[in-house]
Image 1 (cartoon, rainbow, N blue to C red):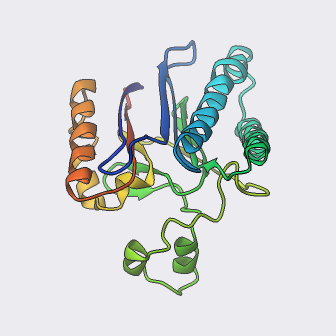
Image 2: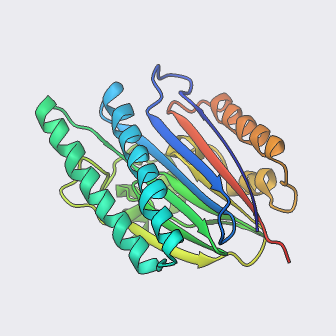
Length: 259
């Protein structure tokens, strides 16, 4: 399995500070290549949102470098163990950010979307309205938006088209740091063909269609890091040209299976 990674983030057209944070790691191991990526979209006013997203990214990076490294070294990996450790990490950061916000008499929080590619499978941890897509012959959203409008679409109150322009689309049902309890979405699946995984903050997807995502990140076309980086940058520029007002972040992981 070969893995090529690229990313790009921008404060956008309006905001002076980029409250999004990201991390991407591709490493070699005795068990093959491993990819680990995190995207967080902070909220809470200027530097507080930036702090929240940065702290959660750093916490997941610390997990990858320490706990996961030990799991790989001792060959003790199980999906149940990963899910439990990720939920514990989310719970710990939720309490830590909430305590800090209480001390400062303000609100702060962040979304978090995490992807691990390991031994031919992918594993996801997700809270909020950032997203993870799997692009193969079509575009599949692997994460669920933890928003009010997404809940109303599921209940049949809104149509998907109405949800795209609903003024309440940014109202989160849960996020790390500003919710009493947080229930992370955990997903896993096999990688059966060449795939591009996309992680992005919500600012990236408001004005981009699934068709455009597939045309840009089609795994049969994307193969080189330089090319993937240029496409990430081009798409962020396109989003800005279409008037997006939020911070914009995208991470792309191209996974090629080798027979």
